[in-house]
Length: 238
Ligand SMILES: Cc1cc2nc3c(=O)[nH]c(=O)nc-3n(C[C@H](O)[C@H](O)[C@H](O)COP(=O)(O)O)c2cc1C
Image (cartoon, rainbow, N blue to C red; front, top):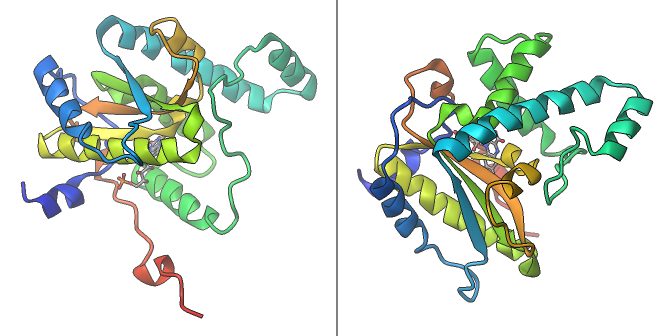
């Protein structure tokens, strides 16, 4: 593929086929991704790759956690406090999910969510269907590979910046190889299930995840949300 075409072709894939990704393929993509630049070249990220049994175990565990969290959101203050105390259903990721979304960015977020649900014919009031759609994040959209991205705690936002460039490299390399990806902040919600399967270094914090595999030919994968026009991107001169 032409480079520009690869950039344009990449999109978030939210339904994967059962086709496996071979070790060689994965290795080749990761080798390409590691050419990413980072500030002073510390490459302040590490990844945990879930496949096979580990992936299946997480595919069982994470949706249950998500269900508990959704239940909690509807529960009374007492139940919430109790759950907090027992650490039951409460996210234990390393970064706090954004609760108060910035007002000026909210319209873009809402438009993207609305666009996705409209494409899927999911109505505003259909909480169950919305829950199922969101829940699919924690099933990795059926992907055969899930990659969890950790960043070194010592470099603050710059670790996240460097990891973002690494991720984009990986997503573009995957697109060029005919594979699909979805970066997923949702996969940063729980760290403890990963502790069961990986030797996670304490000084590396879970940033997000990424599902990888072959794109299924389904409606959800046709979703192409808008981008801001350049006029909104550019900061005006004084
Ligand atoms: C850091 C990051 C986190 C994301 N988290 C999620 C997620 O949890 N679930 C999801 O379905 N999409 C997630 N996305 C995908 C975005 O919704 C998507 O990139 C955006 O809507 C633009 O669409 P496109 O990727 O198809 O171009 C994430 C993307 C990024 C870069």
